[in-house]
Length: 134
Image (cartoon, rainbow, N blue to C red; front, side, top):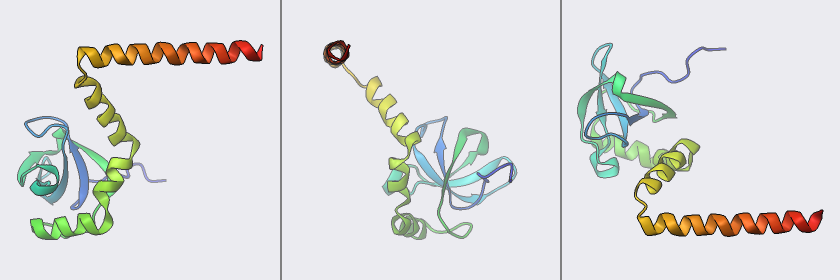
C-alpha cells in the first residue's frame, strides 16, 4: 500500500492556506524547485492569478486534472470544465466544512439568535417524540 497518495504534480488541485488568496482553490501548473510551485486558479474561475507559491502554504487535495507542465490558462480552464473538477470539489465534505465555517463567520447577531431559537424548538420536538415512545 503506498504511503502517500497526494503528490505535488502538475494538475493537482490545492487549497491555499496562507496569504492574500487564503481559502481559495488553485491548480499546480509547474514545479519550480523542491519548495516552490507555479499555481493558477484560473483567475476567472477561482480568483487566483498565476504566481509562484511555496508548497508549505498549500493543502493538496485528492482531485487532479490531466494537464501538461506549464500549460496555458485556456488549456487549464478547458480541462477543469471537461472533468467538472470544481463541481466535484464543491460536493466534497472538505469543501462543505469550509463553506459552513464561512457561513457561521458571516452570521449577524440576529442570525445567531434565530439559530438558537431553531435549536431549542428542535430539541423540544425530539424530547417530546422520545417521551411518547416511553
